[in-house]
Length: 157
Ligand SMILES: O=c1ccn([C@H]2C[C@H](O)[C@@H](COP(=O)(O)OP(=O)(O)OP(=O)(O)O)O2)c(=O)[nH]1
Ligand SMILES: [Mg+2]
Image (cartoon, rainbow, N blue to C red; front, side, top):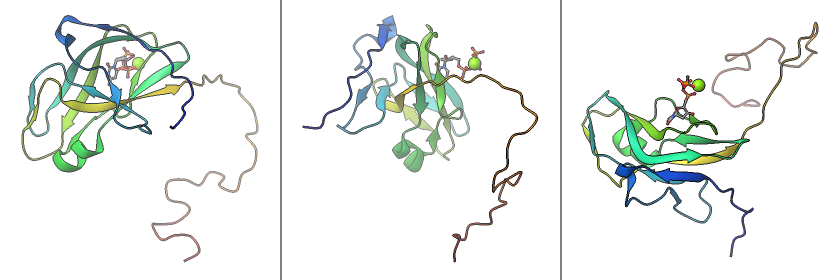
């Protein structure tokens, strides 16, 4: 049996329209994300966006976030993606978890209540603080960026 670190409890409330739906769940033993299901029916026309209801409100433990990521199968087969990916669910958010989807495909896409529409990745949050300095230090890259190391051909070829 595969062992995992102890799972972190995520408090949740089911909203009335979420009654009867499965909780977000890991599809396999090694899955990074929990598949989350839609709590409403939506027909997403090409180029249309919609914040799809999940029927869930959360209290993520302090020091963690949830990242909302698209499902690759929906992206590849139907052009369904999340325009804000990875979506950020803050630990202090108490509203309904919504999954913002966009249809980049050429055909309307039918989302039905109970369909797995995205995946939720629980992640620790490291907070930063700003420290102003006169000298940032030398590096091999320096100010080079945005393609400065070359094109698509692998280095050494
Ligand atoms: O895909 C998403 C993204 C965000 N949210 C909720 C939870 C998150 O904590 C809150 C705010 O998200 P974000 O900070 O990305 O949006 P914003 O445009 O900066 O809004 P705000 O001013 O409320 O922070 O909206 C969702 O339900 N789904
Ligand atoms: Mg914000």
